[in-house]
Image (cartoon, rainbow, N blue to C red):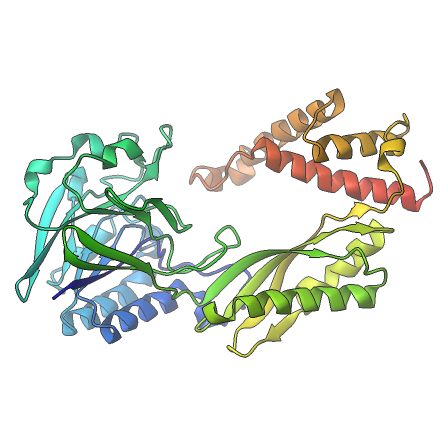
Length: 430
């Protein structure tokens, strides 16, 4: 007999997906929590594992407690145990929920920042869970430094549960050294904190971030859902993905070189979206919303017209496909280049258009020049001023702003250079 474990984390109960209609229940993380519970019961899961940040934050407690408690009670009736650790968002909420005594099938591991082991037994099969929970909102030490292997029974399969940042030493969210996952009596590590699903190690032992089971924003593209662990013994643990998110975000590039008129652009965009969705049709069962960010690529004779034609797409495009999935558009970026016979010749001019052409070529060719260097430096400086200003202080303190990479900065600059050059060419001012 094998044991089946469904593992997930970072559900952030109380939040909703961006760019989903306000009245759509599928946009709420509560919807996906109920879907996880129902799937677990229907599929005969033995254990549900939660790796922290199940509740978004303290002020979501009363919003989340009802659905979370109801789910725990359903799982109890189905004889499904729950093992979990607390993250930086729910470090003091999960202990309250787990400690209220209503569901004895729910076990919180590692309270107060101390490693803890609990053994699960069913029909002669056993598995042990070892976990560490956030004792406070910020943790700058690696909890793996205090891991105690003596707590474990080395004859029973062991699953490690942890919430934190891997290989980011400066993180204030439990910085984890990936090397410390090795040479410990753990047969698989399941982590929380990162919303994008990631496999850090395939084996020896496997180390997985299941990611958020509910996709919340365009920063989290692709398939989302829990992972399923099937345990035969210590040396036979199979892991697979279970797509359950009702919302999915994707990025797509569409070549509009031959779309010289607005009607042609609409046809090109519509065809591009439908073709892409059809390539994913087998993955869209149960997905209510497939939300696109579009990048218009290629060359166009009038960038200004192209930007004007692209504006209505965000609000107007809404199409349902055979899986009853609605395709919508969140953003359209015009990354097309001005249509030029020879941008190299234009770049030789000392006019504003020539300077822009020279900058575009430098970015395209991964070169640099003094003007581009100053642009990048100025962009970074102004971006830092904005995100550290009083207006954004509350958001910045949560760590939700990331410093942009050199490549990302140059892509912003490239977009603006293309836009300005298109404007100048439209004015016939070289």
